[in-house]
Image 1 (cartoon, one colour):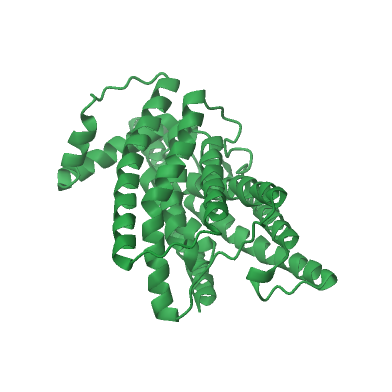
Image 2 (cartoon, rainbow, N blue to C red):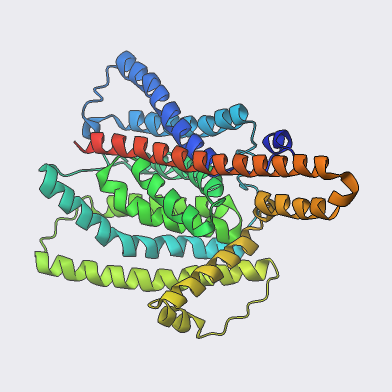
Length: 394
C-alpha cells in the first residue's frame, strides 16, 4: 500500500497548483526584468513613458527580454518544484506536412472570427475610460525594420509564451480535465498581457492554441499557430498603415458580422479537420461519418447533447495527447490496494487491518488537501493577474 511519504515523493505529473505557480513565476520574472529595461532606458536616454514614441530598437529589446524572462521563469519554477516542466512541454514532437499547412489557415480564420469581438470590447473600454487602449508596439516603416520586427514580434513571443502557457500552464490544468485546461489557460493568457486592446482576442485565440496543442500532442503546433497569428497582425498593420477609408458605422458593423460568421464557421470545420489529421497520424480509427458535424451541432442545444459532446471531446483529446500521467488516479490506486488489503486482513490480523485503514484515510485526506491547495492557488494566481490588468486599465 502507498504511504503518505511515498505519494509526496512520487512524481505524477504537474498539478493544477503547478500551472498557477509557473504562471505567477512568469509575472515575477517579467517584473524583475523590467528593472533591466529601465536600466537600459536610463543609460540610452529613452523615454519609456510613451510607448508610441519608443525607438524601434528598444521595442525589439523589450520583446526579447520579456520572452527570456518567461522561459527563465519556467526553468526556475521547474528547478524549485523539482518537476521537469520545461523538458516535458513536448516542443520536440514532430508534425506531418498536412498539420503544418493547416495551422496558418486556422490562424487566419481565428482572426476573422475574433477581431470583430475584440474591436467591440475596445469600443466598450473606450466608452468607460474615455481612452482608447492600444498595443503600443512599433514595427517600423522600412522594409528591413519590418523583417526584423517579425522575428521579435512573431518568433520570440510564439516560443516563449507557448512554453509558458500551453507547455506548462495548460498541461498542468488538464489534471482537472482538458476542457477546463483550454478555457482557464485561455483566460490566464488573455489577462497576462495586461492590455485591454488584446484581452478578448487573446482569450479566444488562446483557446485555439491550447486545442491544437492537445490535439496534435506537440507544442510546435501551437507555436506555428501563434507565429501565424502575430505575423498576420504585422502584415495587416503594414498594409493598413497608410489606408484612410471612411466607412459608416452601419457598414462597419455589417462587415464585422460577416467576418465573424465566416471566421467561426471556417474555424469550426478546421478544428475538426486537424483532429481528424491527428487521429490519422496516430493510427486512431475515425468512427464518425461525414455528417457528424451536423449531428454534433444539433445536439449542442440539449443538456444530454452537451454532455455527450463534452465526453467525446475529452476522450479524443486524452487519446491524442497521450500523456501517461492521465492514467494515474491516486484515489483508484488507493481503493484497489485497500480492496486487496481487506482480502488479506484475515491473514494479517485485526491490528494490521486497523493500521491500514488509518493509512488509507490519511492518504485520502492528503489528496483532499492537495485538491484544495490546487483550487486556492489557481484563484490566487488569477486574482493577481486580474489586479494587474485592472491597474493597467485605469
